[in-house]
Structure formats: structure tokens, C-alpha cells
Image 1 (tube, one colour):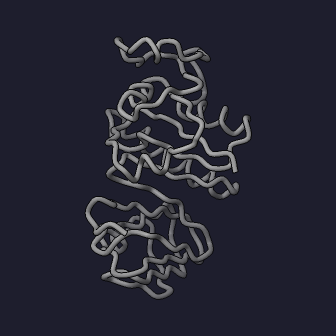
Image 2 (cartoon, one colour):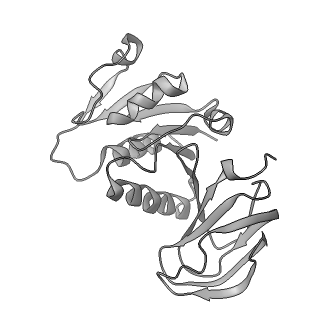
Image 3 (cartoon, rainbow, N blue to C red):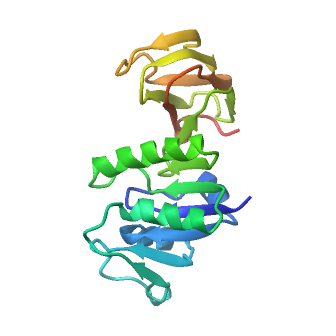
Length: 214
């Protein structure tokens, strides 16, 4: 398995879990995401984008990172370009660090939709800000290692059917969820969390710092 971390422009908090998730990965920074390299104590192998939001002051070791510049008038975001480069280099698993928050809500939405598209193509994708994690749900049972009390929501990107949630304060058994419903918001882990989705597109959004460590 070839694992990559993509540094994106959203918020990022360094946590022990995040350190474990990116350990041993190859790293590509997307434009302003380069600033997270200092927070994480890493040096990317490549820095891509149009550099319209590049930090004005960087340490010398980050200034020296090889760059691949793209024109401002382009059909993809810097983050998507970084993902595409990682896939071209053989990536089979991606950590999208800095995927949430920041000044652009549209970019956060794109990162979630992009992770779903990648998962449907067989690419393991984790979105993270350190305090929040997003994991695409496929049409098979998925088991998660979050501790008791961890807050989580299931975000539907379509109407959902056959949704089963076990190991939660509010379990569900083969339910249908209309698109835009809040039924699957703000649940809590109770034991071993597992989710199975029959039809539709959805993403599990968890807040791991709210639960007990496992």
C-alpha cells in the first residue's frame, strides 16, 4: 500500500492520533496547506498550486521544497491537483489533512465529496482536522475504533436506505433517511461502533477528542 498525506488549506490541530495516521506517509502540500508542515514537523516532497494563498514567511527548509506551479485560471482546486498527483504516483490510501474549516466552506464540501469519489474507486481516504475525522461509508459494514462517548454524525449526500448503526447511543436498524434529514446527526459511540449502508452516499464525521481513548 502506498500512503500519502495531502496538506490542505483548512484548520489543523496536531494530535497523537494524527501523528500516527501520517507516520510513514509521503507528503504533498497544496498551496496554503504548506503551513501545516511546520505544525506537524514534516517536510513535504512536493508543493503544488497556483500559490495565490502561499504563506508569506516560511522557514528555509520549506522554501526549498520542490514546486509544481499551475495557472490561476484552472479547472481544479489546488487540493484536487495534489490528490491527482498522488494518484499518478501510485497512491492507494490518502490522509487529507486540513480538510475542514478555513475561510472556504466550498472547499470543505469539495473535500468531503472528493473523499467519497475516491472511496468508490477503491482508494482509502481519511479527512481530518485533528479534532474531526471524516470517513466515507460504502455499501458494506464498516467497524470503527472510536472510544465510548465519541460524538459522531452520518452526513448523507443523497437519500439513504438500509442504514444500520450499532454500538451507538441511538442505534438504527435498516432505516431510510431522506436527503437533508437531521436524523443521523449528533450520536454517541457506545461500545464497538459499526455502520452498514444499503444504498446512497454518506460520510461518517467523528469528533475523536470527545470520547475515551481506545
